[in-house]
Image (cartoon, rainbow, N blue to C red; front, side, top):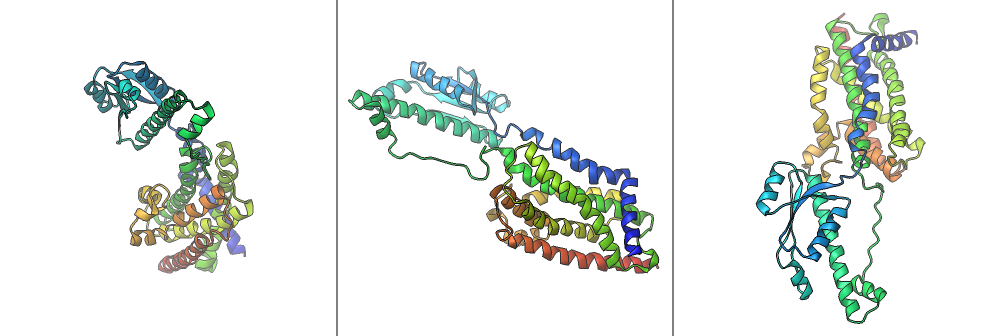
Length: 382
């Protein structure tokens, strides 16, 4: 046990004496918790600038323009004289869409016919495209409903009767697990889990790379086994990142009002194999980094693939089966799936048992690999 505690103390000393590793393992975790959510705090993209080409110039077309400008997703930034002028503004990036009201719009509606309104949206920026199209569909339906209700009232129906006839089926939609329907509540919780993984892997890789540069193996003295060394070092990173994870899940989530439906004990039970699998993966990889800089270069490169392979930013169904299978060797794949279900959907440990067992399987796999590689390096230096 004296050897175990010696390695434990040495690892803490190494972390706090290595300024670069300290920035990654402590500073980056705190910094990203406040910096990363900032761009997404508005939650929903609003007031997308659009141009209107009013070729009808009637009171009804002006009403449609006012309703469009009043919609929270849209902002009528300009009224153009021609479609070509509005299209040039879209290509320049000044506006996100064009609404074209054709000549004869009001006359066609007054005759009981069906008028058309053309909407062009910039699909190069998909969120902007979605808001423009959603906003205009809502405006068009609202205007159509008002016209139809007035027609029914003109035919002798009362207000409530006209509304019931115009809308015989009432739809009550309730968004589940993301009540504000915001982008931040969707993407940030998953990214925070990935930040825990990537900072931990980079920090371990940097310290391991430094040890290889100095040809040092902490804990080799005194005849400690590779298992004992790994156990002592694992205890260090597990204790440090348990604090980070609890800070994320119970403080940062509360500050930004992200969904928190998971029971604390369930979060803790799922957190244990998640952190252990990352730590042991870090010990497995550290022997492949001849220098500390190599760990940063390699592991930063893996961050974006890990995001897409996790299956929350890109549909799981669209990922090839063999690639989906390989993705489960990255702890964040099962980790993000499990934590999203627990924190946002209120899942129990039984509900996420598949992801939980995958993480325990990774603990065993990477624990054996890390012990094997460390034993080989220790024997090679004797």
